[in-house]
Length: 507
Ligand SMILES: [Zn+2]
Ligand SMILES: [Zn+2]
Image 1: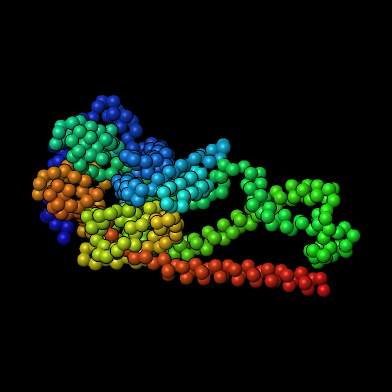
Image 2: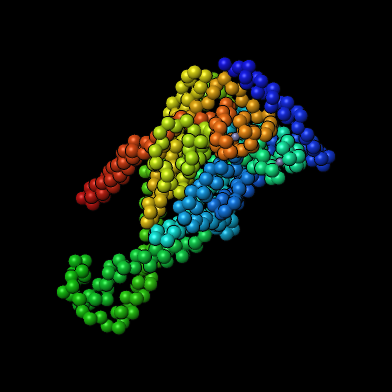
């Protein structure tokens, strides 16, 4: 059914592009000719975008901020999140401090994937991520995490960079560069439907990384030592309180019957012992806390890791025959961002990509939603010229509970669909968006209804549509408990074995 209609539309688009004045200055033309989209230059452009994103994301929640290094979806998602936080009267501050000195520099192109049209790569930066959220009557929310920030940089494999080309607004005649028109004409507000100006960051996630912490180790150890002081004070009390003439068995040490009023010399000995012992104990406590943090992460990530492991392959082999335009990374990046737009939007029914029948109010109190870095692909089916992909998205949500904010790990099952009869193109196109009823221009990507006359406009056929969203956290909770039990059992068994062999060794 790739019909007359589509062909006509394409023709129309071509005419619009052809008829639009495209002033390219001589200087720019030379620059384009010399760079010509070569691999090296694209790499540099991708690295620049990843760097700019880390800078912009730290300010994304400030009034009026536009994260231009992010693609259209992610940019809109961050705007919606900022609006929700503002509506909930929360004062939110975020700080991305580069962490340890000397600063660990970001690594670009850690991994990359190619499909028919795109090259998707990961860039990793290192940050000390500070977050605070305040509101009167609410417990202040404070977090400081040393993290790696992983960005999914999406780029076209062979595209011409047109972002510096000039374009004449068909409504007011103002001349702007294509780059400046991404958020509409600055003179008259006309919105445009245009191809994304890649490279852009399409998704991001954070991974705990103790290596980023700016705190020197002696400080950490002292802090842990001070925290364990109440315990060590009691533990070492016998040194000062015990009668020196009493027998030195462990049990008598702890019997208060032997305790005496200490001499000054012994009090001094006690204080010295505490000063010496505290950092050592602090070190052990710190070490144990690292162990438990690792253990917690293992319990949290194992089900997701196992679930996502085979997804990449399954998606690639199945999609290759249906629509080779997407790698798993490009797809999962797109779908998670669309899901987050759904989370933060207050008028979900007017989102052009939203076909979810019943979403309820489950997501209305979410003020932050960070992707875990996992998305697993469960099912792919083709029906009536549509491909339906079902996958599980792993997120950490921060919810407004009224008197406090609560962070929770959650899993949502999402089904997304795309037309299989609409061809895929990355050729650059730009067209003014006009309401077919009243002629007004509005951003039809943000809302399918014209804000002036309310007329519903048909969403673009080449985009993914979200058909279903389900909270499936419980399913994974049981798996998580299972894996924790397995790990504990293995640990217990090995300790038991060790003790047993020591025991038989002694005998
Ligand atoms: Zn204009
Ligand atoms: Zn209208």
